[in-house]
Every structure is written in C-alpha cells, then in structure tokens.
Image 1 (cartoon, rainbow, N blue to C red):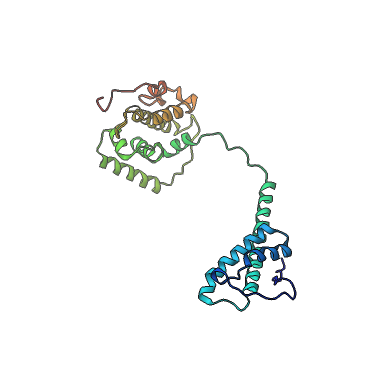
Image 2: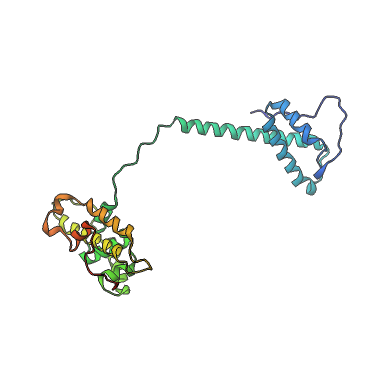
Length: 260
C-alpha cells in the first residue's frame, strides 16, 4: 500500500503550534482523525492511528524534544500507524479465508489405544513380574509405593525392579510389535495384561495410599479395559490371571488389604 502523504490542514491556513499536554498540538485530537478520514475514509481506524501517534509523542518528545512541525510529525506517524493497521487487518482476513477454505477435519478415531499400550509395555524381554510392575508404573498410573504394596515388597526393591526393567527393554533388540491372538508369545502377554488389570482394580477397590478408601476411577478403568480384552483368548483357562474374573464382576478379589 502506498504511504499516504501527511495531511497538513487546509492550504493557506495559518499554522498553530500551540502545544497541549505532552507537547502535542492542542487541537491534534480532533484535526488528526478528520485529516486521516479525508485521506483514508475510515474514521474509527484513523482515530486509533492518531491515538497511537499521540502515545508515541508522549513517549519520545519529552526526551528528544518537540519537533519543528509537531502537527506534521503526528499526522505522518498516524498515517504510518494506519497503514500498519490496514495491513494487519488484511492479513487477518486472508488467514481467516484460508482457514474457511480448508476441508473440515474428520472425526477422531473411536478406538482406544490404552489396551494396546498395556500389551506393548508387557515386553517379551521382561519376566512376568517385571513386566507387570513396569506396566503398572508406565501405563497404569500407579506410584512405585502402590506397586510395592500390591506385590508385598519394600518400595526400594520395587523401584530397583522397575529401573532394571527399563534398562532391559532399552538394551533389548526386540521391538514393540504385538503378536496376533493365538500366536506364539500372545498367551504370556495376555496373562501379564490381565494381571495388571487385576492389580489396578484391586488398588482402586481398596487404596493402599492416601486418605480415600476407594479410587472409583481406577477400578472403572480396569473393568473397562478388561472388557476390551480379546474375547477368544480370554476363554482359554490358561490366559486368565488370578482374580480377573472378580475384576470383571466388579467385586473385591480378596480381603481388605488395609484392615478396614
């Protein structure tokens, strides 16, 4: 956009350099928008530009001194501010039009990856106890102290077990690919996953830490994930973890661990 020439009022009109507040001309608050509107045709935007020019004058003139032609300085500054406003507004309109032309985003997939993460975390390079502990910590959301309580071991021992499990997975050359149901390696993973869900449900049913006796969200999540486990393999008697049937029924799989 070409830079408009500063408006200096009516030709031949006497120049008035009477200064107002901050050194600005006394009538600049009214003559500025009128001149800018005459040049641009948009009074609201012109008024905003003049206000920004007055702010600039209040900041710079006390330190740098009042220019020889204060009104011309203000109108030139206001014209530049107006140009910046117009450019910004036009760029915003272009962005909005671009977004409006873009195709609508499709619906997010309804599949839940939580169960897949459980199977992936039960890595074949780990022993069942290490896989269960690591999965409870990484995916199940249980703290190390809660996992230690579920396994009836000291917290320091469980922390070392989880750390060694991470190192073993990192050093293993076996990826995180999942075997298909019924194939080799599937049954051990399924047993570990069901054991994880059982311990999650048990911790939610009778919490071992904190003031709350129950953690309904944890129990509900365990039951939900247990309902999504592959059906054919779940019917195999060897694929059921101890207490998994109780987790599916929503009942306590064992006595109250807190003695309540």
